[in-house]
Image 1 (tube, rainbow, N blue to C red):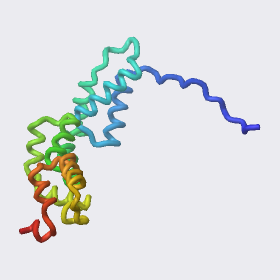
Image 2 (tube, helix red, strand yellow; image 1 turned 90 degrees about the vertical axis):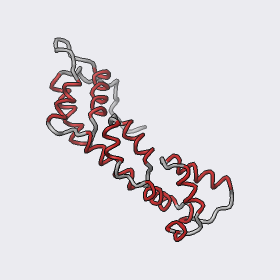
Image 3 (cartoon, rainbow, N blue to C red; image 1 turned 60 degrees about the vertical axis):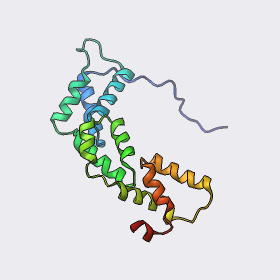
Image 4 (cartoon, rainbow, N blue to C red; image 1 turned 180 degrees about the vertical axis):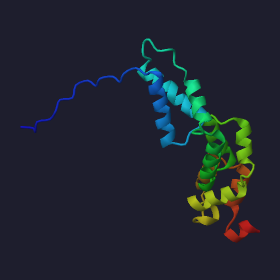
Length: 178
């Protein structure tokens, strides 16, 4: 005979949202995660769709909640973009990948441009090659299919094709520095 377990019936749906609960969700989210305004707004709209809105309450205004979080300094798109770009650059991601990530988080083109001004494409590509053991940092490869795969890895990381080909063609680290 199996041990006695509590039978779990269907879960009771969470109560509909009101303004105070929406604010609490926003504060809880920004205290746990660094976020952009657009990402916070996306979360708030998702919560409203999932839980609905309490009857008798004025209509939801997630824009106002997001604006309040920005005004309080809990959300700062420029700081978020800078931190995100630094983290991706540390992992050896190219400018294309950084730009795509920032766009996905709702960062405007002007802020992206300011963040990417100090981006070093050569240094990022070398860091990526070292991390992934590509080109002169890995075993010598004569198979064209493997070289194409390595070139694809550079492309997915957001590096220009010419830069990737130059690193992959090098036989040693000294040749790269020359």
